[in-house]
Length: 193
Image 1 (tube, one colour):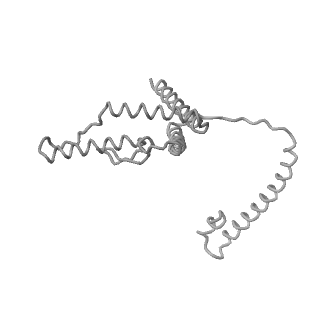
Image 2: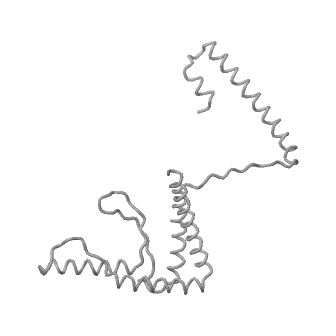
Image 3: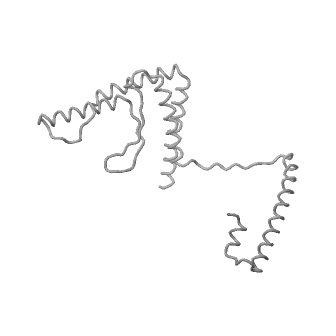
């Protein structure tokens, strides 16, 4: 709906006031279009002169940096997952809700964590079925096993990054975004203090 249509809606058809206002709006519209044409002609002459620009850069918000980190993670894990052959060391991301909340969060885990979690869950269920323990939902991942797999994953990533410049760049980009995020959080905390 144009300004003219919006303005004329409450008018009664045939009213002299409405006709007068409509003619004023039409005249104003014609003058504005004429002025715009003259401005466009003047802009051509102005383009030939050098114009100084002032660029203002605001600090990035934490939400923006976090979203950039998520996109960087996606690129990083896509590259890494195409290079990694063993599915245990590929990283999978999904949205999960934590206990006690309905808010979904993006969680990225290597395949070995899900496998170890599945094994711990099966042991918990087996103990409950045999009467050896109570069902607690408090199963823990075996720390030694987890540490062994994480070290192997780190070794695989270092080797692949040495061979693949795209993966090395993705890792560096993600690390820089994490640094920016941490610095921005620290800066905001200092401002609050």
